[in-house]
Amino acid sequence: MKTAYDIIIRPVITEQSMEATELKKYVFLVAESANKTEIKKAVSEIFGVKVEKVTTIRMDGKLKRQGRYPTGRTASYKKAVVKLTADSKTIEFFEGMV
Image (cartoon, rainbow, N blue to C red; front, side):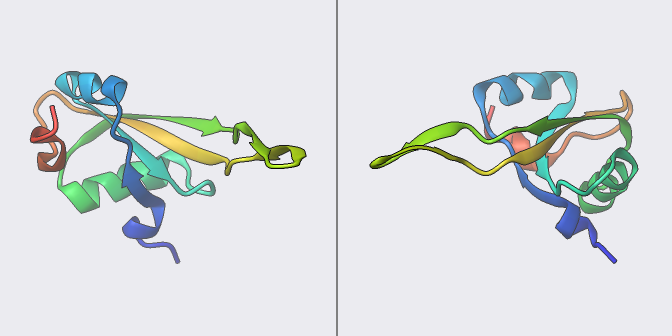
């Protein structure tokens, strides 16, 4: 059985994701086999917040040159955008980065 830490791999720290924290939206890299219900439970268990909505995105790996050989591919991954309820507290991990 998967634990919450197996589902949530790491947060995604980009300019766009940091701007979304003002709207209580947080972006995480998640396990490719995880569904929205599992992600919602994992985020609420790890950070102690109330989750309103989860949106998931499957990202294909990018084509990259690999020396002499024409193309290789970076790893594919799945990310989730988690929106918290209005009465929920914020996630402290993201507060110092904005």
